[in-house]
Image 1 (tube, helix red, strand yellow):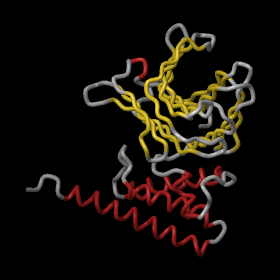
Image 2 (cartoon, helix red, strand yellow; image 1 turned 60 degrees about the vertical axis):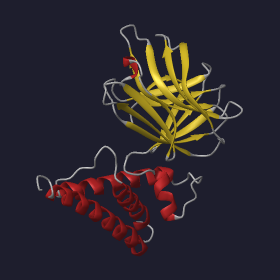
Image 3 (spheres, helix red, strand yellow; image 1 turned 60 degrees about the horizontal axis):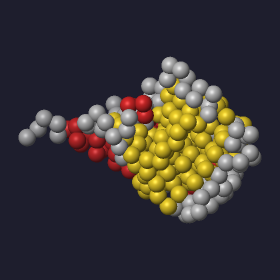
Amino acid sequence: MVNFKVYAGQWSQAGALITGVVDATLSAYAVTGSETDANYVFDVTVTPDTEAAVGLIVNHTLDEDWNESYLVLVLHLDTDPCTVTLEAVTRDADGNETSRQILASRNMTLTAGTPYNVRVATETLGDGSFAVYGYIGNFLVVEAEDLAVQYSAGQRGFEILGVSGDSAQFLVNASDYCTVADVKPLLHIVLTEASEDAELAGCVITGKALVDGFLKVNDLVVPAVVPQLVVDAAKNYAAWSYRRVRDPVSAAEFWNAAQQFLQAHIDSETSKEAYVGTA
Protein backbone atom coordinates (compact mmCIF):
# COMPACT_ATOMS: atom_id res chain seq x y z
CA MET A 1 0.00 0.00 0.00
CA VAL A 2 2.10 2.90 -1.27
CA ASN A 3 -0.47 5.66 -1.77
CA PHE A 4 -3.39 6.12 0.60
CA LYS A 5 -5.68 8.90 1.76
CA VAL A 6 -5.47 9.84 5.42
CA TYR A 7 -8.76 10.77 7.10
CA ALA A 8 -7.52 10.91 10.70
CA GLY A 9 -4.46 10.14 12.79
CA GLN A 10 -0.75 10.15 12.07
CA TRP A 11 0.65 7.68 9.55
CA SER A 12 4.16 6.69 8.54
CA GLN A 13 5.69 4.05 6.29
CA ALA A 14 9.04 2.25 6.42
CA GLY A 15 9.37 -0.13 3.51
CA ALA A 16 6.26 -2.30 3.51
CA LEU A 17 5.47 -1.57 7.17
CA ILE A 18 2.81 1.08 7.87
CA THR A 19 2.27 2.56 11.35
CA GLY A 20 -0.80 4.48 12.47
CA VAL A 21 -1.12 6.56 15.63
CA VAL A 22 -4.38 7.86 17.12
CA ASP A 23 -4.58 11.64 17.42
CA ALA A 24 -6.89 14.02 19.29
CA THR A 25 -9.88 12.80 17.24
CA LEU A 26 -9.50 9.48 19.12
CA SER A 27 -9.12 7.68 15.81
CA ALA A 28 -6.76 7.02 12.93
CA TYR A 29 -7.89 5.71 9.57
CA ALA A 30 -6.71 5.76 5.98
CA VAL A 31 -7.78 4.05 2.74
CA THR A 32 -6.46 3.20 -0.70
CA GLY A 33 -7.74 1.73 -3.95
CA SER A 34 -10.86 2.45 -5.97
CA GLU A 35 -14.51 2.75 -4.98
CA THR A 36 -15.31 0.22 -7.70
CA ASP A 37 -13.01 -2.49 -6.27
CA ALA A 38 -15.04 -5.62 -5.53
CA ASN A 39 -14.56 -9.31 -4.77
CA TYR A 40 -11.09 -9.01 -3.30
CA VAL A 41 -9.12 -10.33 -0.34
CA PHE A 42 -7.38 -7.79 1.93
CA ASP A 43 -4.55 -9.72 3.58
CA VAL A 44 -2.57 -7.92 6.29
CA THR A 45 -0.36 -8.83 9.23
CA VAL A 46 -1.72 -6.61 12.03
CA THR A 47 0.29 -5.88 15.18
CA PRO A 48 -1.63 -3.85 17.79
CA ASP A 49 0.98 -1.93 19.81
CA THR A 50 -1.50 -0.95 22.52
CA GLU A 51 -4.84 -2.13 23.89
CA ALA A 52 -6.93 -0.29 21.32
CA ALA A 53 -9.48 -1.31 18.68
CA VAL A 54 -7.57 -2.08 15.48
CA GLY A 55 -9.25 -2.93 12.20
CA LEU A 56 -9.13 -3.51 8.45
CA ILE A 57 -11.52 -1.41 6.38
CA VAL A 58 -13.14 -2.75 3.20
CA ASN A 59 -15.74 -1.39 0.77
CA HIS A 60 -15.18 2.26 1.75
CA THR A 61 -17.19 4.70 -0.40
CA LEU A 62 -18.33 8.32 -0.41
CA ASP A 63 -21.81 9.48 -1.44
CA GLU A 64 -22.57 12.67 -3.37
CA ASP A 65 -22.47 14.66 -0.12
CA TRP A 66 -19.06 13.20 0.89
CA ASN A 67 -20.57 11.04 3.62
CA GLU A 68 -18.59 7.86 4.20
CA SER A 69 -19.70 4.27 4.59
CA TYR A 70 -17.55 1.19 5.05
CA LEU A 71 -17.18 -2.21 6.69
CA VAL A 72 -14.40 -2.92 9.16
CA LEU A 73 -13.08 -6.09 10.77
CA VAL A 74 -12.00 -4.99 14.25
CA LEU A 75 -9.66 -6.63 16.76
CA HIS A 76 -10.94 -5.26 20.07
CA LEU A 77 -8.11 -5.30 22.59
CA ASP A 78 -10.01 -2.54 24.42
CA THR A 79 -12.72 -4.89 25.74
CA ASP A 80 -12.80 -7.64 28.35
CA PRO A 81 -13.02 -10.26 27.02
CA CYS A 82 -11.32 -9.28 23.76
CA THR A 83 -13.50 -9.66 20.69
CA VAL A 84 -13.28 -9.71 16.92
CA THR A 85 -16.19 -7.90 15.28
CA LEU A 86 -17.42 -7.09 11.80
CA GLU A 87 -18.96 -3.61 11.83
CA ALA A 88 -20.82 -1.33 9.40
CA VAL A 89 -19.80 2.31 9.85
CA THR A 90 -21.03 5.64 8.51
CA ARG A 91 -19.42 9.07 8.94
CA ASP A 92 -20.50 12.53 7.86
CA ALA A 93 -18.55 14.78 5.51
CA ASP A 94 -16.47 16.07 8.43
CA GLY A 95 -15.42 12.55 9.43
CA ASN A 96 -17.67 12.41 12.50
CA GLU A 97 -19.01 8.92 13.16
CA THR A 98 -22.80 8.82 12.73
CA SER A 99 -23.41 5.09 13.17
CA ARG A 100 -21.57 1.87 13.96
CA GLN A 101 -23.48 -1.41 13.77
CA ILE A 102 -21.99 -4.73 14.86
CA LEU A 103 -22.87 -7.32 12.22
CA ALA A 104 -21.01 -10.25 13.79
CA SER A 105 -18.85 -10.83 16.86
CA ARG A 106 -16.68 -13.52 18.43
CA ASN A 107 -14.67 -13.61 21.68
CA MET A 108 -10.96 -14.25 21.18
CA THR A 109 -7.73 -14.06 23.15
CA LEU A 110 -5.75 -11.10 21.80
CA THR A 111 -2.51 -9.61 23.09
CA ALA A 112 -0.87 -6.25 22.35
CA GLY A 113 2.46 -6.65 20.57
CA THR A 114 1.45 -9.91 18.90
CA PRO A 115 1.19 -10.02 15.07
CA TYR A 116 -2.02 -11.48 13.64
CA ASN A 117 -2.58 -12.54 10.05
CA VAL A 118 -5.94 -10.95 9.27
CA ARG A 119 -7.86 -11.36 6.02
CA VAL A 120 -11.12 -9.80 4.92
CA ALA A 121 -12.75 -11.29 1.81
CA THR A 122 -15.49 -9.42 -0.04
CA GLU A 123 -17.68 -11.45 -2.34
CA THR A 124 -20.68 -11.19 -4.65
CA LEU A 125 -22.69 -14.38 -4.16
CA GLY A 126 -24.41 -16.39 -6.87
CA ASP A 127 -27.79 -14.80 -6.15
CA GLY A 128 -26.33 -11.31 -6.58
CA SER A 129 -26.19 -10.52 -2.86
CA PHE A 130 -23.06 -9.26 -1.11
CA ALA A 131 -21.04 -10.86 1.68
CA VAL A 132 -17.91 -10.23 3.73
CA TYR A 133 -15.86 -12.87 5.58
CA GLY A 134 -13.24 -12.21 8.25
CA TYR A 135 -10.35 -14.58 9.01
CA ILE A 136 -7.71 -14.69 11.71
CA GLY A 137 -5.01 -17.00 10.37
CA ASN A 138 -6.81 -19.84 8.61
CA PHE A 139 -9.97 -19.58 10.72
CA LEU A 140 -13.18 -17.91 9.62
CA VAL A 141 -14.22 -15.98 12.74
CA VAL A 142 -16.93 -13.55 11.56
CA GLU A 143 -19.11 -13.20 8.50
CA ALA A 144 -22.03 -11.15 7.20
CA GLU A 145 -24.23 -11.82 4.18
CA ASP A 146 -27.15 -10.06 2.45
CA LEU A 147 -25.35 -6.72 2.84
CA ALA A 148 -26.77 -3.46 1.52
CA VAL A 149 -25.62 -2.31 -1.92
CA GLN A 150 -23.63 0.55 -0.34
CA TYR A 151 -21.29 -2.11 1.09
CA SER A 152 -20.84 -4.05 -2.18
CA ALA A 153 -17.55 -2.49 -3.33
CA GLY A 154 -15.01 0.15 -2.39
CA GLN A 155 -11.59 1.04 -1.05
CA ARG A 156 -9.67 -0.79 1.65
CA GLY A 157 -7.58 0.50 4.53
CA PHE A 158 -6.83 0.64 8.24
CA GLU A 159 -8.56 1.95 11.36
CA ILE A 160 -7.47 2.44 14.97
CA LEU A 161 -9.83 3.64 17.71
CA GLY A 162 -8.57 4.51 21.18
CA VAL A 163 -6.94 7.30 23.11
CA SER A 164 -4.38 9.71 21.73
CA GLY A 165 -1.08 7.87 21.23
CA ASP A 166 -2.54 4.39 20.73
CA SER A 167 -0.90 2.76 17.72
CA ALA A 168 -0.72 -0.30 15.50
CA GLN A 169 1.44 -1.63 12.68
CA PHE A 170 0.15 -3.02 9.40
CA LEU A 171 2.14 -5.13 6.98
CA VAL A 172 0.19 -5.64 3.78
CA ASN A 173 0.88 -9.08 2.43
CA ALA A 174 1.64 -8.14 -1.16
CA SER A 175 0.59 -11.50 -2.51
CA ASP A 176 -2.49 -13.59 -1.98
CA TYR A 177 -0.29 -16.61 -2.77
CA CYS A 178 1.44 -16.59 0.64
CA THR A 179 2.13 -14.31 3.59
CA VAL A 180 5.14 -13.23 5.63
CA ALA A 181 3.78 -15.47 8.39
CA ASP A 182 3.88 -18.43 5.96
CA VAL A 183 7.56 -17.86 5.15
CA LYS A 184 8.93 -17.41 8.68
CA PRO A 185 8.65 -21.08 9.80
CA LEU A 186 10.66 -22.20 6.75
CA LEU A 187 13.46 -19.88 7.82
CA HIS A 188 13.09 -20.75 11.53
CA ILE A 189 12.15 -17.15 12.33
CA VAL A 190 9.85 -16.74 15.32
CA LEU A 191 6.46 -15.41 14.22
CA THR A 192 6.53 -12.60 16.79
CA GLU A 193 9.98 -11.39 15.59
CA ALA A 194 9.17 -8.40 13.38
CA SER A 195 12.65 -7.02 12.61
CA GLU A 196 12.82 -8.86 9.25
CA ASP A 197 9.19 -8.28 8.21
CA ALA A 198 9.87 -5.49 5.73
CA GLU A 199 12.54 -7.53 3.91
CA LEU A 200 10.38 -10.65 3.98
CA ALA A 201 7.47 -8.69 2.48
CA GLY A 202 9.74 -7.88 -0.46
CA CYS A 203 10.65 -11.56 -0.75
CA VAL A 204 6.95 -12.45 -0.86
CA ILE A 205 6.58 -10.10 -3.84
CA THR A 206 9.50 -11.88 -5.52
CA GLY A 207 7.87 -15.25 -4.82
CA LYS A 208 4.66 -14.11 -6.49
CA ALA A 209 6.53 -12.78 -9.52
CA LEU A 210 8.38 -16.06 -9.97
CA VAL A 211 5.17 -18.09 -9.76
CA ASP A 212 3.43 -15.81 -12.27
CA GLY A 213 6.41 -15.90 -14.62
CA PHE A 214 6.73 -19.67 -14.69
CA LEU A 215 2.97 -20.13 -15.09
CA LYS A 216 2.82 -17.62 -17.95
CA VAL A 217 5.18 -19.81 -19.99
CA ASN A 218 2.56 -22.55 -19.67
CA ASP A 219 -0.36 -20.20 -20.46
CA LEU A 220 -1.63 -20.55 -16.89
CA VAL A 221 -2.67 -18.03 -14.25
CA VAL A 222 -3.38 -18.44 -10.56
CA PRO A 223 -7.14 -18.73 -9.91
CA ALA A 224 -9.00 -16.53 -7.43
CA VAL A 225 -8.90 -19.32 -4.85
CA VAL A 226 -5.17 -19.97 -4.60
CA PRO A 227 -4.34 -23.72 -4.71
CA GLN A 228 -2.24 -25.10 -1.87
CA LEU A 229 0.51 -26.16 -4.28
CA VAL A 230 0.85 -22.53 -5.41
CA VAL A 231 0.98 -21.34 -1.79
CA ASP A 232 3.74 -23.88 -1.08
CA ALA A 233 5.67 -22.85 -4.19
CA ALA A 234 5.38 -19.12 -3.46
CA LYS A 235 6.52 -19.36 0.15
CA ASN A 236 9.53 -21.48 -0.83
CA TYR A 237 10.48 -18.99 -3.56
CA ALA A 238 10.19 -16.23 -0.96
CA ALA A 239 12.37 -18.17 1.48
CA TRP A 240 14.93 -18.70 -1.31
CA SER A 241 14.95 -14.95 -2.04
CA TYR A 242 15.66 -14.17 1.61
CA ARG A 243 18.30 -16.89 2.14
CA ARG A 244 20.24 -16.52 -1.13
CA VAL A 245 21.84 -13.22 -0.07
CA ARG A 246 23.04 -14.85 3.16
CA ASP A 247 23.85 -18.42 2.15
CA PRO A 248 23.42 -19.19 -1.58
CA VAL A 249 24.25 -22.88 -1.15
CA SER A 250 21.60 -23.66 1.47
CA ALA A 251 19.10 -21.45 -0.38
CA ALA A 252 19.01 -24.05 -3.15
CA GLU A 253 16.81 -26.34 -1.07
CA PHE A 254 14.05 -23.74 -1.11
CA TRP A 255 14.37 -23.20 -4.85
CA ASN A 256 14.18 -26.93 -5.53
CA ALA A 257 11.15 -27.34 -3.27
CA ALA A 258 9.39 -24.41 -4.94
CA GLN A 259 10.04 -25.86 -8.40
CA GLN A 260 8.63 -29.23 -7.36
CA PHE A 261 5.46 -27.72 -5.88
CA LEU A 262 4.89 -25.48 -8.89
CA GLN A 263 5.52 -28.27 -11.39
CA ALA A 264 3.00 -30.45 -9.55
CA HIS A 265 0.46 -27.65 -9.91
CA ILE A 266 1.26 -27.20 -13.60
CA ASP A 267 0.93 -30.94 -14.20
CA SER A 268 -2.45 -31.04 -12.46
CA GLU A 269 -3.76 -28.12 -14.50
CA THR A 270 -2.51 -29.37 -17.85
CA SER A 271 -3.91 -32.83 -17.09
CA LYS A 272 -7.34 -31.30 -16.51
CA GLU A 273 -7.12 -29.43 -19.81
CA ALA A 274 -6.23 -32.65 -21.62
CA TYR A 275 -9.50 -34.23 -20.54
CA VAL A 276 -11.76 -31.37 -21.61
CA GLY A 277 -14.23 -32.60 -24.23
CA THR A 278 -13.34 -36.28 -23.87
CA ALA A 279 -15.70 -39.07 -22.95
